[in-house]
Every structure is written in C-alpha cells, then in structure tokens.
Image 1 (tube, rainbow, N blue to C red):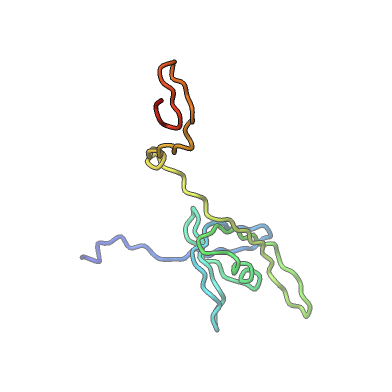
Image 2: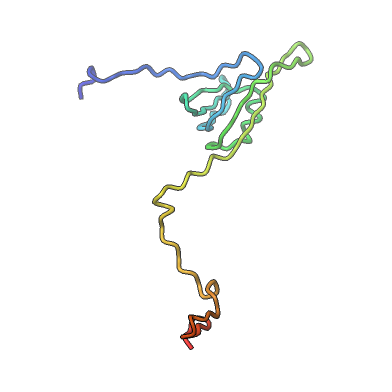
Length: 139
C-alpha cells in the first residue's frame, strides 16, 4: 500500500469547554477513564457533532459513577460555588436516560404471528345452521 497517496486527516479530539452557566453537552457516554495519580478522570461522549472528551472534576466524577456506559447523558455547567478557605467547586447537573429502543423495521413487523391457542379461540360458534363448533371439534 502506498502510504503517500492516502487521505490523511489530523486526529484532534474535540474537548468540551464550559465557560458560562448553562453550557451543556449531551450524548451517549462511550467510555470512562478513572482518575490517575497524575491525571484527572475523563469521559468520552458521542453526539451528532462527533466524539467529545470531557475532563472530570470532583462533582462530575461523583455524578458520572452513577451513569452506565451506553446510556444517554446530559451535563449542564451550573457555575462555581465558593467554599471555605478561598477554595471553589465547579457545579454540574448530570441527567441520564437509557438509550432509546431501536425502531422496529418493516422486516421485524412483517413476521408471521403465531396461531391462537385453543384457549384463545371461541369455544362455541354456530356456522349458518350447518355445523356447530364446540371446543375445536365438529359436532
């Protein structure tokens, strides 16, 4: 394979940046990367715009432990809370939902339906004065 003739594209992750209260990202939680000894936790979220890297924080890490990978997630930045000692805490609201059920395709709705069982059929029916059907037998 001639590597010089390939259509090379740079790989630059899109990083979600929040600056103002109300900034939001939503999509499917693809991966969770726990906090390391020298790095923050990080999360990958996929939506129509692509795959986003979301850096963790104390509040996000706590909330996202409750969200399963594969579920929908919405993260909303709510601002900064002043703590004692001059410290601050970034506040986020995190909502989650199960992934939407797949829409049935025509092939799956056209499948043959099973025949009703004897309990589901009428037990007695008169057919225009000719025969009487009683529990599936002809009298």
